[in-house]
Image (cartoon, rainbow, N blue to C red; front, side, top):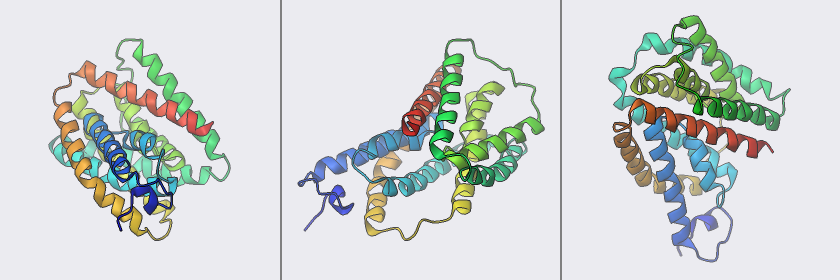
Length: 259
């Protein structure tokens, strides 16, 4: 006898199998499309949809697995634009920051951390939305990039938003869209891996999670392809608006999760 997604998770849904699959696939496609387009925010978009009918314990590993696939595919597509000399300060800083962020949770409650980071993201996005594009950090060097990398690791380790600080900093750097993505996407991938290695596994992954993973792969591939195609049609102003809009969404989401 076939089971719907919710039943596989332990939540009977009166046979709404088709709706469950449609919602899960739609959420996967939307998150992959946004990540392919802007280079980040898979977890924010996916969680906003999946958490309506999936348990958080299932959502977390699915976001981690899918986000790494999408980010990895995007980094591969942009591989010719990736410059190791530009990203190493961020990666080194993140390696220092991730353990600090994870340990910070021992002293600062997760709710307060999420709300603090969410408030900063909302303020940054709104401030930059209503003012001209800024290149205030255009002349910053490797030391500043490494410092931002530490902040990136702390935020990632404490909230799970891997790469978000790098996204903000690249925006302030005033780099063209392709150059921004060639920095914050590899940094995001590296930070995701560091977080996973530091925090360790949460136990055996059940058959329901594995089933959901394979079920979502087609929508993930299609969404990633569509997002990457759309990215090529964005000018700098359009890319900036998308990034600021997603930063605002990320901040609001953290505020609501924190509250």
